[in-house]
Amino acid sequence: MGELILIRHGETEWSRNGRHTSHTDLPLTPLGERQARALAPLLADRSIALTLVSPLVRARRTAELAGLAAPRITPELREWDYGGYEGITTDEIRRTRPDWNLWTDGVGAGPAAHPGETPAEVGARADRVLAEVAEAAGRAGGDDVVLVAHSHFLRVLTARYLGLTPAEGTLFQLATGAVSRLGREHGNPVITAWNVALPQSLFPAAAVPETPERT
Image (cartoon, rainbow, N blue to C red):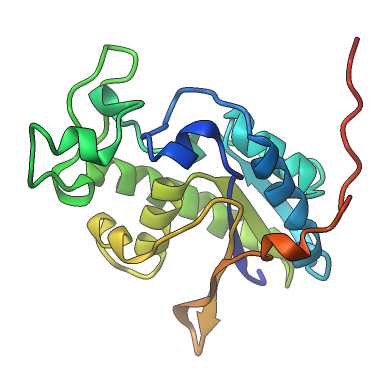
């Protein structure tokens, strides 16, 4: 395999407002769609063997607008289940839990369908994705594998790739519409690029054609 390319989806209304968003299936904002199209030139020179994408619409739409062909929907790439903190900002949580830290404390209990995940549970899910990537690497030759997913999950996955604890994902800030790359140096796991995005002034006018409206 070449490199493992990580893409965080473009902006949504909740990501813009700092609201924790896991299972709530929000679309991209107009800026989020422009961010997604701006990924295309950052990926144009890559030889990609496989793209895995979260089932949520913000990730699938990002992959589509970035020009990634035939992505495989992968439920394990969904965002950290925030349980009772879904849709709530960190500032709001800290009104009742002043010292709260997602990376060490996890989330408040949610409903049965979305009870929330601990850092360790998200780390275990990231390990399963990395195992799937490792299996795919044997068939990829020197080509890249792309993951299109969500901020906190990709940060945990990066920590696990580097042999760190899930909580050490806190070290890797990740913006909407950004590309990062993980690779190897002398057999050791390394970050080869992190949080790369075109500035808005350089966004291509139409890196990928608009999807026609359906009537």
